[in-house]
Length: 98
Image (cartoon, rainbow, N blue to C red):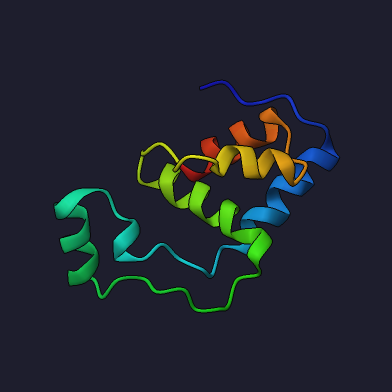
């Protein structure tokens, strides 16, 4: 995947969003398939360590899905776009998460 061409301000938005959800790890329920859930359970699952504001839930869902090499759930990309993220920023988050 090619690196998206973003302005410094757009990269800052990506960085800020990813930092905001960095301590809100993916739980075992986010892991793909039964093996992923079992591995997550064996590792104790990585429960979210901080409460997450509502507007960051789509960011977290997107990052978790991409870090597990899955397609984000329906509406997640649309929710990110509605929050003002460009397609290039969303592609950058996918690249960094994977």
